[in-house]
Image (cartoon, rainbow, N blue to C red; front, side, top):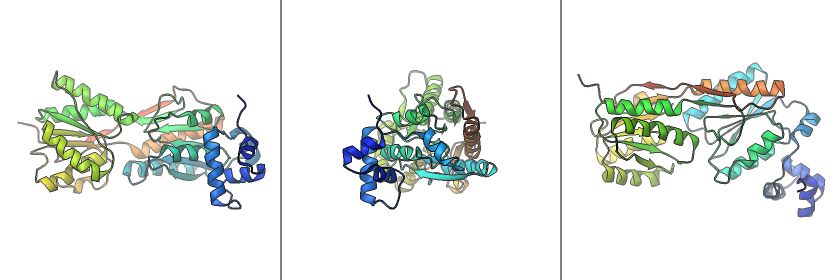
Amino acid sequence: MQPVTIKTIAEKLGLSIATVSRALKDSYEISAATREKVKQAALEMGYQPNVNASGLRAGSSKTIAVMVPEVENHFFSQVISGIESVAREYDYHVLIYLTHEDPKKEEAFVHLLGNGRADGLLISVTHNRDGYAHLNRMASAGFPMVLFDRLVEEVAVPHVCTNNEAISFEATSLLYQRGAKKTAFLGLDADLFITRTRLAGYKKAVEQFDPGAAPLVFAGTGKPELDLPRLKNFLHKYQPDALFGASESMALLLYELGSQEKFHIPDDYQLISFTNLSAVPFLNPSLTAIIQPAFEIGKEAAELLFKVIKKKKIYSAEQKRELPSAIRLAASIRAPSS
């Protein structure tokens, strides 16, 4: 199969090679409609820029790209701060791309990076049911890349994460040790790496403290207007007395539902959750939190990326860094029995 080139795209669309080239580089000499048409065709045809050739022409851009699903989540904003602290040491700029959990946006952004606008990519992936061929193409072409937090096993590049499974086991165990009889899991997309690993830790604790019990799993959509009534029904149906939040947004739903339904944390429901929200101590009651080392994850991921950029050497799958999270106790779980 012949590789797709700029000429191939130009012939398909009936445009000049120069127009296609400028459109792929987001040139404002080309209309927005034409730029969008060219990018969509490039995506559908599987066009992959020659990152090595473009790098030779342009030299170093002194820029690295960071791709995240969102910045409202305090974890990602802290990761970006860690990345920027390292980038400054190398005299690099940081270019932020927000995918908004849209795999098509992620694919389009990744394709854009092949034109030399960045020297490397740090990415926390969005869930893509079609797979991650776009990332593997970039890695195969020699484009420096490091994954962080949300990982995909089929992309063999360096990655940085936290000890999701171990800390989830520890947190769920703590709920049982503080008197919980039936603990439920509050998570998001079950196919996400962080959801799978955190769910595995939760299940191990259930097996240990409540042998034979079926895990109780609530899978949120990330949309509060949909998840609030679903969570209310879930609690009424299964009647857990403790909840382990695999994400900050799921834990905050319980507080909102409590204000509506007039139940109390931790008397009715004990709660512990992953969160890097700075306002956690001011919640009523304050939330027992699993704090991820977000700033340090950003620093480690950036250092790994600059190592790859400097050595111009493609990855070893063993280049994995796992940093420990920590539990900060607060009033959302019961005091230990005397």
